Length: 318
Length: 313
Image 1 (cartoon, each protein chain N blue to C red):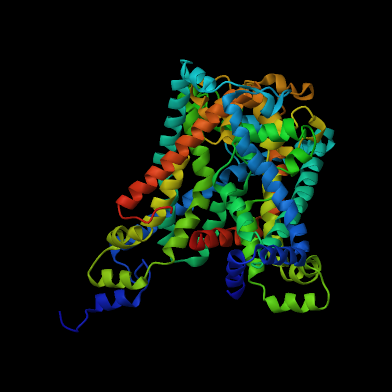
Image 2: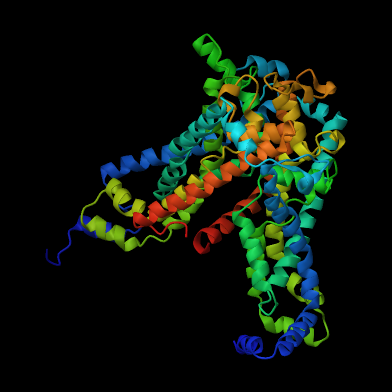
């Protein structure tokens, strides 16, 4: 406290005193600055340099001439994306997958958390939780590999459906099944893990509320509906806002593994587009422009859904 | 309503939590359904693993002919013998271990040094540097500008540095370690600096020995991240196949070799013939085993970590 007051005094008073004090403090903490340096350099190089690198979205970036030496082209890349007739397909594929994720995956952890919360055999519940959390720690490559081994043409599920239906379903190579496979993998991998945040919120529920409701004759379902669910409402809203921010993200590391020539009608999302244009074809400026557009939409969606949450009387994200 | 409480209500009051102690019939049906459903979900979650492990020990003939099984009739280790005689897979395993060990060491070094410096409230410019970290948690340059920095500006393509350095600090983890350091009693550190220790000496001799559990936790967080990562290695070390970690190899062996992939030209001539099912399964098992070995610790610490984030964040 007193040192802050001194600082202010020094600022308003003689500049020489301030600089002298600053220099002596920096000298005193010189080893701390040495410790700080690697981290600061890391953030400048790997976080801030790419942020300024977004300018290439307005340039015709050529690696040889570099970011500063490349030709400025303004909004050329944005215009050419919207002038390209297939852009609506990319947008539609992205939005359909996101909406399916919201409808089928988003409620899953909430429902499972509510069901786990109703269990009273603590040891058994913990055993089930141990089983449910496993897939979260498995690499996405392994998840997709397991899917290929089981749903691919020589896989067990593929053969089973073939013998039941009389004809095969091309799970891994058809645009009709592509989205369901993605959603299924996400549900399998993340539902168990997703319950934790809701279970944490549920530990804060006042048990007296349940007692009072029981005295009033409320059954299990009504207690669930009127006490448990409202208790996690703010957490649900929070997760929903965060989810809104990634409406245009389809998870490129997941999709790139699942996308192939046969399901491309459904698997071409904006993320896949950025990857293919930027990394595979070397169209860095074009891909950055699409990436930048995605980020702007995401920020807008988070800010506006947060505002809606405030209007509905929720605390929201900030 | 007077003070008299009916026996039924009394029983209800004795119980706590969402579930009554002495349940009505409807409540019992609810319980049966609930337990059955969640058990079924949990079993479905681990069933693929059980099948893959079982089938990796089966013969190719059994996998092709028997519908669903978990324990093979003829136990065969042919798939594992194939894997451990394949230089390619052994090299992938070695690369994954190398990347995980070196990557985690780099992560801990960068995280601890920065967290310790920022844990000192007396440090001039501390708020500036803290804001720098926090802003980076909300905004990022995106995939392509990051790629250009690593591949074109720093020229790290086809080196291990391209996967070791870009994720050196997780801002979120660093902030938690910083908070932990801030809660270590100052007196301990002050007495050491009286004895002529520099700040680096205090960190090495006093603070780090006190933080071993925290370092173990975050080391584990980082290590799992490295073991599971494939994207960086795939895009930065595309042509340096001898440096590929297991995950990138797995993508080639199982996903690209499936015949449905668009970019078949990435395929290695050694594996143009898709590997047998049992070999694929054995590779999946081998690359999952290290995670399963640390899973008990992971579950314990990760759950705690998410809880801290959920309650305090």
